[in-house]
Length: 174
Image 1 (tube, rainbow, N blue to C red):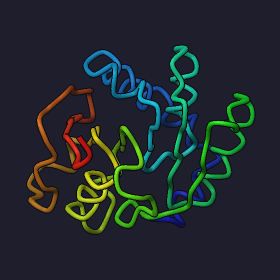
Image 2 (image 1 turned 180 degrees about the horizontal axis):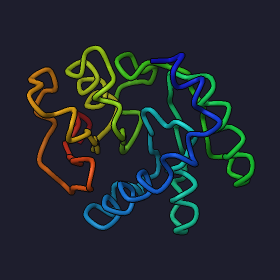
Image 3 (image 1 turned 90 degrees about the horizontal axis):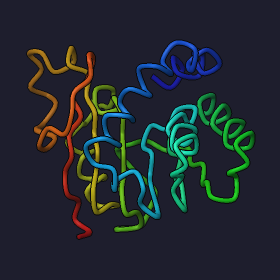
């Protein structure tokens, strides 16, 4: 997976910006306060499109934790964050979504868009989200959910897009 995303990092935005923006828009419509938290961890941040989107809407978080397994994606994220002149609020971390190197309750919110479909142990990823944040937003590809019991119940449905379901769950940090 890491190799695939390293290879596609440069063209990722061109291929997926519109699809990702649609997910962010749906979350802002249905849970606006989640994306406006002081400390927001973007698990599987990719090229930091979420931060770009939030900055364009005038609601960047006070602290943005950009976490991804792919050095190629993180390189693109670092460039984007620099271009946005938001380096002062971003932490860029190379890490696995199943083993997040953050302290318990270190974030007010965690978001992860279509990463749960890619990890080896989705249950472990959800446990990590719960451990680090008060609120978690997780999206999953509809096609990945068909007939695959390996993805555990994520939480109540928050919104849907053409390709994804978006769920909200309370973490262990309330």
